[in-house]
Image 1: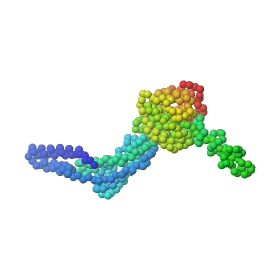
Image 2: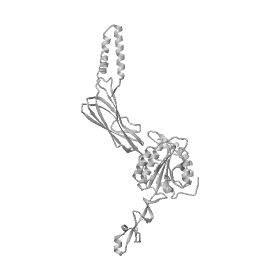
Image 3: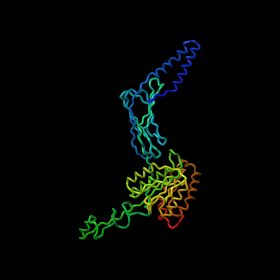
Length: 422
């Protein structure tokens, strides 16, 4: 603990000097007697140096949550000595809001006494935040020299993007023979029952339908439909973002949409990959399973805009990251026209594109400015006209959820048009 002088010290010392000067000039004892209590307070505060001993423990649960989920901060105090009135407070990051309880407390403890405080914190934006850095101030005796202490019980909380609501999506045009939720018309390896047929050489014994075989005195086997899955790539535009740095930007909205799409398609046993296209181009190779889900969440957690006059060429992305026939969701705000060069290249290579355009008007919290929203929408529609003419489904955000009309965009044109060039 460190001692800090209060402003009253300088005020008392000034009054003491004035009293001494008046007493010397008037040669009377009355002015000195008036300021004598101030001198006693200064001497008492200087000589009395009790150092209280306090044990503080902070527990934060959970340390991994989603945006808007409550995080409980529990502060446990145990006094080793008598603690005079003490002020304890927990400063929060700008993105955090205390929804329950208080972050500042005033408490006095006796020796051996314990006390616990709790408060709940919610974060409105994804990221890694440090909680548990507390400060305390004790005012012993006259309180002219308070004791300040800094307690480091820091724990890092990982706040993942919030999941958006998704309706049923249409399956991609190109699928692969693998374990998935898309059922093929041809019979083969799978789980969906297709029918019964007579046994032929090479069929597996474990597929024999014993009830029918015993009834007809001939071996019959079960047939199943083949299972397919698809390759889904999430292309995140990190060239530029607009919005409030603490409440959220267009990139934060795009990240929420990307996390929701990844969660949905991974539940369908599809292979999902991630490409962050900007000044620094990073990617995750498509894969399936829960481990891939956590990889994508960690990658989206650290997604940032990187300013650069030179954007990476999309052709430098390895083919294993952009497999042929993949369904690519482009999440962009179209604030930088350099993203169009990457989209032109993807369309020319016959990828299935679905564009989700995030509105900067919603990100900046100016929904009531109807003129700005109309102007932005007209300019966006003009820039996307050539992609619409190629049959690329385009969703322009007109609500809080940018994926509201995703199902309609999938069903509007059942087949992506081919044979046209930009």
